[in-house]
Image (tube, rainbow, N blue to C red; front, side, top):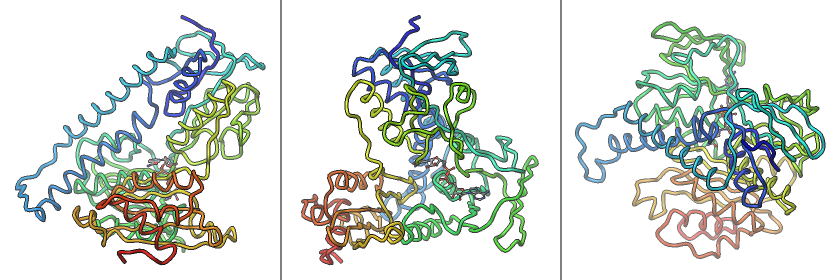
Length: 469
Ligand code: NAD
């Protein structure tokens, strides 16, 4: 097998495989070293994709139970076959990983299965040892795209059955009666939604005072109220100090902000307190690659080059939001720069999405962030309730908020809690990418009747002239 390349990428997740495809398109001889037997990383195998498959299945089930009657549809004995639901999820993952294999072959990218370790790093020549194959390959450049791994917490021992992580929560064999979740972040809310819709009682324990603390305050309060209405309960400003599982139950010890203690009993506990960069075994210190105090690889902000020339890092292993789409765009940028082109990524327009229902999506800055930065702004808001399409869909919950610079009217942020927010936010991202004003968005013709009219109405509302409110 060939062992000399222009570019070696360690990690075949969305950051790594997209970087590889772009590099190959630009004529670079490219290799990917991937530990898993298939490509796709956390996102495709145990993250974004399987969770979205389950979110979709559980949403269908919930609608059949609670939404059909209003449409005049009788569905008398609606049941969920968890095994079949999981089989569907597994099939979707397999189709995507097969698709990635096809893309690697099509683009003539060499994939080495095994864990890569940087052995030698000199300008213009990086040697990566592939442990399982006891072989070494060399590249002119190297990109570290090894992603992240789940964080656990002290005194809460993951056993994969009663005390679980997201890896297990996407593969449960039966519906837990009471699922307790540590962490009201993205994973807690998404997987909590899956199992809530299937009938579990959900209690989310969160150390901070609210869900999704990075989100605009008013919009996160709105999202939380909707989730509470759906039956999710939250214990805020509480910390889990320990948990013990026996065959059937989990006993969870809580400590409140004032120091008082409490006990929660559940039949399953999901730990969703974040992820840490995965840098183990890569030979980073030996190669002279520096980590910051938070264990993330230090890179130059613009070039994403590490402290060792010719070695770059992208995605979850460096500072910034742990999002597949960000890693993908960083991968494209690096490949283009290595190929001598002007690769670029705009960190101000990265969308964030939480796939609950309604969905929660945002881009740019929140009101709180702008206030803190001393930037004057106007906001325009529009509810989904008066929107004709939302009404036809029985989707009354949610709101769009556009935040624009007070002086220039340039859009500084947008947030949507509502049906299909994950798709609707793309328009706001594009508007911001082109430096649009709220007026630009408001004067753009939006098809009627569509949910996207709520975005136009919110933009109109920045100038206090929305039509339907
Ligand atoms: P997160 O950072 O989104 O949320 C973790 C939450 O746990 C935070 O609210 C935090 O305050 C809380 N927490 C931490 N320690 C705690 C403790 N001891 N007790 C109680 N609460 C505690 O992390 P996550 O939900 O685990 O997701 C991991 C990463 O994966 C995130 O970076 C996320 O962006 C990414 N992800 C993204 C998506 C998406 O984009 N839709 C989906 C899943 C995961």
